[in-house]
Length: 179
Image 1 (cartoon, rainbow, N blue to C red):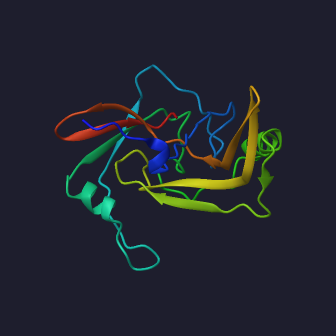
Image 2 (spheres, rainbow, N blue to C red):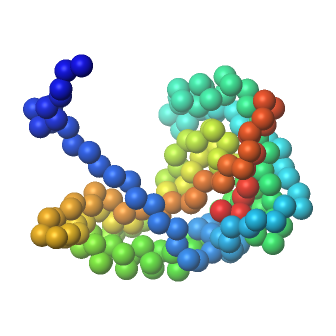
């Protein structure tokens, strides 16, 4: 095997770091407490790819749909609501989470955006009941100095957590919505 010279290749490596916030869920008032006890109910779903606003169907969504997977979502009624089940529109962004993200942006020398918008990323592996994940860009162009080395931070986002995968069989992939 040939040794690769990463500098000659121009390889740059980045990291995506996730941090759960100690607050309620991002688009509803449900608690974000992970639970160990068995849920009292479950919901079954099949997700299908649909056209985007541009009239296109995402290729990754088509590939997932070809697997014909079905999904079961375990629900604890006191920590899951209709928003989490994709039966009600999302509520406004959790203000406490927004404030935490803005404080983190300032601590990371990042520039908060003038106006935050909720974006949707297609996710059809079942980890989100709606078939997409909501993300809010909060700040850009930050940096953090560690031991004299400046580490750049491209973006800081708020993102709803994917459901927790708890099992899989030939018929279903099982997720828990307590996230």
